[in-house]
Length: 231
Image (cartoon, rainbow, N blue to C red):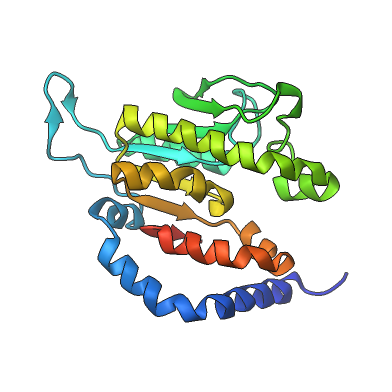
C-alpha cells in the first residue's frame, strides 16, 4: 500500500511554512495596506456586487474578471479542468463578465467556451506548443527536459497578451491560477493599470518547492504580490 500520502502532504506543507516564516509579518502588513475593495469582496464567497457607476448607453457596469491559467477546455466536450469551467459559469451567473487567458495548444486560436471568450497566446511553432494540456507541465518537463526552453517565450508572450487585454478591457480583477509562473504574466498589467491581483495555488507549487530549492525566492516574491490568495 505504501506510506500514507497525508503524512507526505503534511511534511511538504510544514516545510513550506518554515521557508516562508521570516516573511509572515511583512506579508501580513503588506496585505492589510494594499488589499483593495474588490479583492476583499472576492474573498467573501465570490459575492460580486454591481458597481455604483455605469457607462452611458451601456447599462449597469458589471465586474470584469480576467482568469489566467495554463489549461482551459479547447472544445465543448473537452474534459480539461471541469472545476475551473464550473467556477467561471458560477461567476457569470453572479453577474460578472469573464474572459479567460490561456496558452495555445498546437496552434489553437482564440475561441469561446460556454459563451466565454478564451484568448489563446502563442509561444512556439504549433508543433511545439505542447507544454500544457493533456498532462501537467511539470510532468512533461521531467520526461522531456528540453520543454523547459519554452518557459521564457511562454511567460513573455503571455505577459504581452495580458497587457493588451488589460488595456482594452479595463478589468476589475485578474485571477491567476498556478501563480508559478502565471503571476509573472499578470503582474505587469496589474501594476501598470492598478488592477487587484488574486493568486490561486493548487498544490503543485508545494511539490516544486520540495524538489527545486531555487524556486523558493521566486515563490516568496510571488506570494508578496497578491492582493488576495487562495490555496
